[in-house]
Image (tube, rainbow, N blue to C red; front, side, top):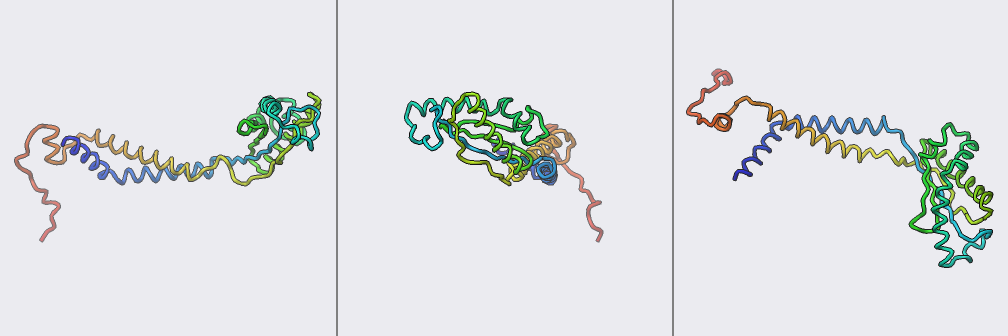
Length: 232
């Protein structure tokens, strides 16, 4: 019975302060929308994939013929190593020079990622940039420079491009709907919190129930507020 009364009181507070909660909700959603639209710089992702084979000096056309369990296992280990070479200074600095990029090695490195695809022999290189065309161009240039450096340093021809990067016009970091939904939840929580805080800080006695609750006294009479009555 006590839990039912307390729950009813909580609901009464929410209903009583409903406009405060609604205002907090709308304000939070508005801030979330403005932030997503005007303050988030859209970033576009583009990727290229490479096939790595463990056989040294193999021609690209003979890659399929070299597949066996031993070579696949070795190739999978090579993919991890090659993934680190992709992000090396010797590769990325050449890319910066070739494309005349206005960024440092560290900045470009923060926008580049490379990893095997599901423990396969395929290496995926991903690049993020504010310009989708530029992201694709950087990814393809990294791929070209990387293949050339592998051939120069290791004297092998065991990497082949599977897919070239293409521009993608959908930003990966602008999620307006999700941001608005999160803002709505936060606004609702904030509104409810403020409503309960105001109710807790309000120590004024307004009803006979408040007299009994706070003072432990029973009301034996009330005075009507005649100022609210319309004159006949």
